[in-house]
Length: 344
Image (cartoon, rainbow, N blue to C red; front, side, top):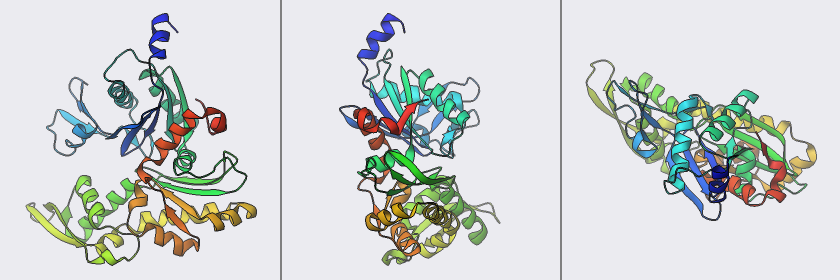
């Protein structure tokens, strides 16, 4: 390390990053969460120049001229476009360090538990090239459990279900390790795509993913609830006439649309419970299942899991932030959580 790089590294605040398919959150040591932006980058296809990152870039999705492309550089929780992911990370580091360019923080970054070694190295390389002096990874279900306040260091079992944008992570944790778990590439994005497909087949209406996401937030539920009378208006293009069209959809409509991805998460939970040692199963029966991630906000998701598993289910206090909070706590207390993350 050069002398100047060392000096500036001493001025840098170490950070934890939840590099999600849908959103990126950044936690700075001593400050907490300082950034929560969509994982979207707008690029000029002619020059390769990055035009916008985060919220500004997300507004461009589906609305850009031919020479501008708004892309999500992560797919299913892993890096799909290395260069754009690196540019996005560099921008976020620049933002949280008050636009100083010579900072070199230590970074802990959350990754899905099911990633390959190649995908793990891609995260490491992108993080280092973006300006980190050291790069560590922590598996997302472990970080989510820590962030939700579960005592992962105890010799008793804790179960967490982290439903993100690209993946859903299910894990039984004890003694700072994952004893049993499943990582499936089903999450909020799959739910949005299911709504797009449903609107196409049932109403001959073409809508974009942003519209599907709005419908999901407005009326979607995983289990029949008191809100079944909710109605949302979906606006798009009539597939028969090609003209603009709007359709009213109710909560039962959307529940039918998203039943397949929701059931995929249910099956992952059941498979994990089947692979869990009997002693830890008894602990989970007592403690229940903790839901984290944006998918935990889906109406009725906890009730659905309670019925299917016959176990108590709780939603974390701040489910969207659990992974980055947990990664930040692991960064702040390396002795307690040393076994939870390792150098890439």
